[in-house]
Image 1 (cartoon, rainbow, N blue to C red):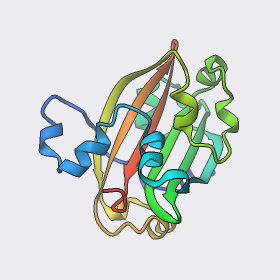
Image 2 (image 1 turned 90 degrees about the vertical axis):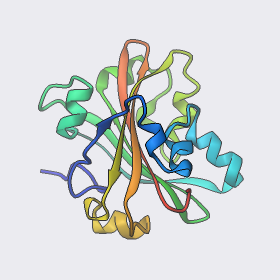
Image 3 (image 1 turned 120 degrees about the horizontal axis):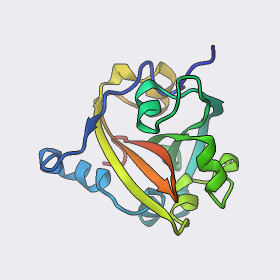
Length: 184
């Protein structure tokens, strides 16, 4: 069976974003975790056109258990899974994992399955029916990352992340973003 991730040795442990969580986080982390707009747009505001996407994985496969539950997918249902690193001139900024069920691809007017090196945020934030449904947070240990991801992203300390469920009309997708030390 193919690996479920090039980023993770195991699935991150997520905590529901509850009231008061924000105030327990370091200030620079709060700023990125609770960004309500497009992270791509914010990165371009900081780094200009130097922001680029390296696609690490894009294939149809079953998501992790918590992702399946979150998106109400049956056990062996394949979703499009995309893992990327956003960087500026080679400086790692964000690692991201996106889970897009088949039904979501069908209702999205743009073709989310053929993004190539385009950032996902450029496409989904242009959807008039986009809505943020839920968000979880995590603090990942360096051992959670695969050696390849840890080395490429220069992960030597715990990394904060958020997992957001977006609705495009009646369909959902999950986007997990991890904020690397270079961005904080």
